[in-house]
Amino acid sequence: MDRKKKTILFLEDEEELLLTVGTLLDDQGYEVTGIVSAEEALRVIKDSTPDLILADIKLPGLDGLDFYKEIRNLEQCRTTPFVFLTAFNNLQAAREAKRQGAAEYITKPFDFEYLVSRVRALVPP
Image (tube, rainbow, N blue to C red; front, side, top):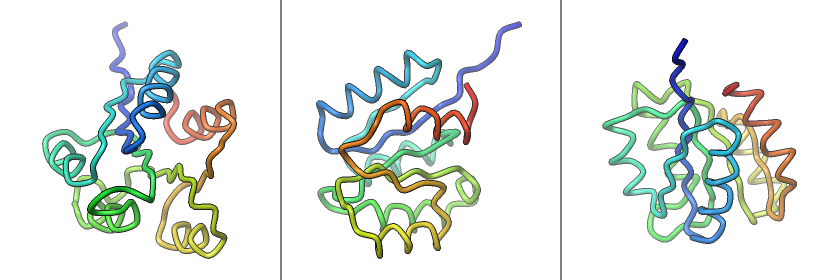
């Protein structure tokens, strides 16, 4: 039986982290699309809805919180699990993200095993 890989859109402006996490999640059986700007991510999402979105908060241009609000206005992304992965270690921001419906708020530096366990819980490969 040929099963389609679950897709993850990873929005991160730090290219080394984008590549590292992308490769590690790919090794876990996911198809990862790495993107460095929220504006580009919005264009990609309009063509293909991912199974999960993983995004930084501090980004050039449109930041991760505003990106989250934008995609929640798109019919096809209203229920897509959304995980913030950010160096922005702020309890108020974390509470606000969760209040708005984000599935997770993980701060950098992060434990990769924890990230994988949360991703697997939200979208099993």
